Image (cartoon, rainbow, N blue to C red; front, side):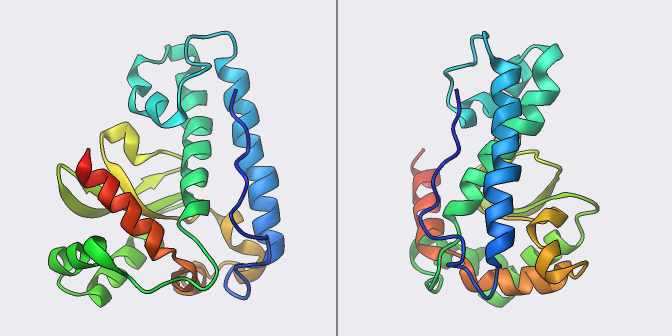
Length: 201
């Protein structure tokens, strides 16, 4: 059975960019809710002990009667576990192989930032914007709801949650302000680790 992962920082650690109340509700209510519903869906099945990321990679093997629940709640659990790790207080500047590849692929870090921001802004309704490794190449795209890049064989390197629950308490309907502010808490050391792990697989 899946459990809520602990954060590596306090709920107020990402202030003033992401407020304490949003972090607390997002982690203890939204993320916990995905876990509870995922556990209920897979209880008594062969998927009960499977790593959630492996489960999402094999989403098409999941029986149809629980597939939607696993897609939504398994995706919610995996995406949020990833999201907490790629944020940190006193975030570093882009470093290492990931930073070099970002510049090479998108022309400059500023161009990458602009394209990634647009992917988040242009996602209609709820969803995520991602930087992924797809067939060995970096790519920016977005997914609806709690869909994970893992379901499409892509490896997430960086991602932002653009569901309204991620920002509404502080930024109301201003998703652009939330994304702009979020860049201040990106944990580039973790992004580098994600990239190195992805290219070594």
